[in-house]
Amino acid sequence: MTKLILTALLAGVSLLAQAEQPRVAMGNGADNWITTDGASREGETFTFAEVKIAGPGWLVMHPFRDGKPDGRVVAGYIAIPDGISNDVSLSVSPQPASGDRYIVMLHSDANRNGEFDFVFVNEREVVDAAVFEGSTMIGHVFVAP
Ligand SMILES: [Cu+2]
Picture (cartoon, protein in one colour):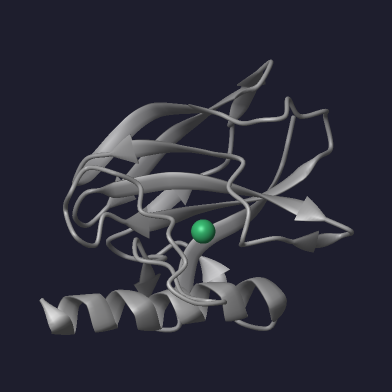
């Protein structure tokens, strides 16, 4: 249990460092991905054609503020089961305008409790950590259609 929590915390650090350091890679992996091509929006609800995650977790959207992604704020999230999900919809608040930018990314349900633990245990670390493959954080800059 201690090891699991430590792993989650370290990944949480990476997430927030990522948000502030664009040179760290974001993208899709071999076992985890978000298909952003063809994503649609109706009001405050986005729909992504396909999402794959290894283990249960969350599809999460973070807003941009002052031109930079703000990984400390969650605009919206939805639970996703282990494996491939199609036509995954999530709603964000406040309602976006066309051209608004977000980070759409995966977080793991690290403690498998079925609740999105976007809980900072200190200034940078959250429990339900960002999903990485190697040094690539599974996420994308996404512009609202
Ligand atoms: Cu995130």
